Image 1 (tube, rainbow, N blue to C red):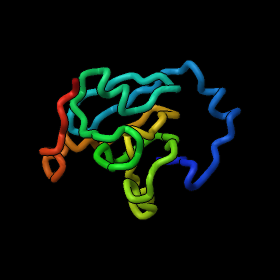
Image 2: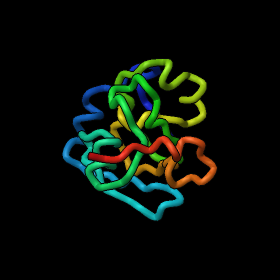
Image 3: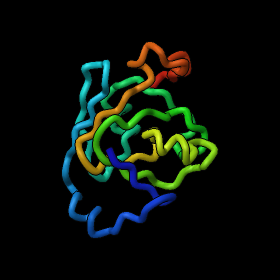
Image 4: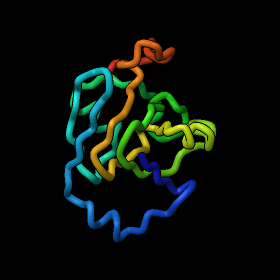
Length: 127
């Protein structure tokens, strides 16, 4: 599992360009749901576009509502607020779906699929 972000590492643009126009698989544990995402897209947008109910609010990395666990794979996190995702949480493998760009096939533990999640009542309806 690898999380790259502008808070920790700079991913060189050549590495990103090599991954352009690829599609990667996002697997949600406990849901038996998987979707494909364009390598240039944001994880949350792909999940919502596929009709998957996923918690979110600001979509700009400020609130932390879309926080989920990256179980496997590699993502790049666009800029976000430290109050939405702390360094300690990043070290535990948590990511913000609204700021995550998928760089490989990934596995995430989504709150709505995790019966022990306290956030499952916070899931918002997708317009």
